[in-house]
Amino acid sequence: MKSTLGRHFAEALAVKDAERIGELLDPQVDFRGLTPNRAWEASGAGDVTALLFGDWFEESDHLDQLVEVETAEMADRERVAYRLRGHNADGDFLVEQMAYYAEQDGRIVWMRVLCSGFRPG
Image (cartoon, rainbow, N blue to C red):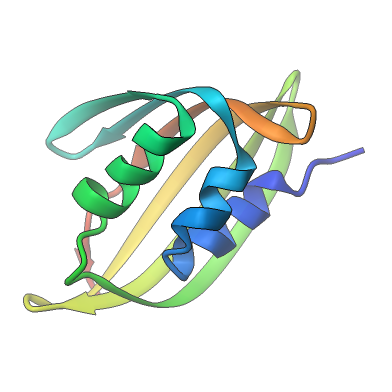
């Protein structure tokens, strides 16, 4: 049966719900991410939420809409791709991310994310 964790992750991210993200992630989650200018690493749900809502999406980055979500199975992993529309002091933007993840006991235990960066939108 296909997991819905990836969709739930994208939905929580779109509304900047750090508490919900924390519930979806295993307390010891192994997280790596790649943005246009940097590679990121975090271990643990608290560190991941701090990274997502402190470094990747700052308080001034307003996420207005979850435009698209696509999920699929990939062998022993799951994949989720999502696009968000938002705005900040620099104007409107689109950002797209693709993540591969593994789950255990209903939580994400391993995740790798590739981010497009903020694109004019």
